[in-house]
Length: 208
Image 1 (cartoon, rainbow, N blue to C red):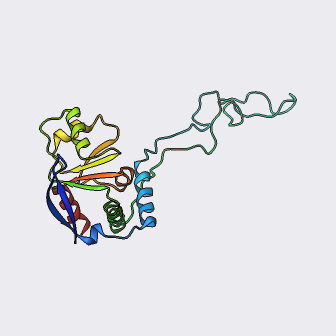
Image 2 (image 1 turned 30 degrees about the vertical axis):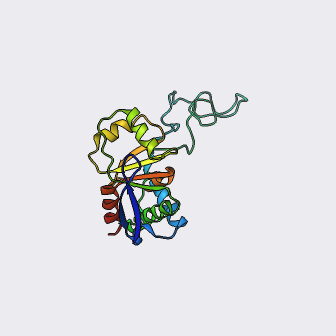
Image 3 (image 1 turned 180 degrees about the vertical axis):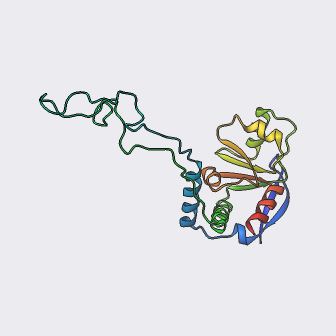
């Protein structure tokens, strides 16, 4: 068991917490992390891009001139892909890019990243992330006292309304619940801040 210090919002140590080595002492597995990130990004794609084929662009369907005898190249339709304004050949069409990977792979990638963040000192656990109000200037002061100067991910229980409202205008701070932590957020934020309840809940999920 790894023992980490628990702090309050004034950056004072208020206790300790034991973390399971099966979640927070896992070797870095870059191949597994790559597959999890690739799957996550693919599932975020809307897949709504579309181009018009020759059957969808506007224009008459009549033959522009007779096949032979004009000296010009033969042409059947004004909507031919060879002409400006014509249809597109083999262009992108709406499609579903999403796919899934096994649950064990997804959770294994999360364990690997969390373990690496803990080893490099980028994981902070606070007693709670309860704020008295939802003013952004107050949460900035709180984050400053915790020494958060880079992109930070705040992870708390689901129903923390004040925290959600106070950080939504901060470009480098993101707040998620412990039930919606994903591999991309863990990698794109150098500093992770968990409430004590959130880290315990996430640990229970990743141990399954």
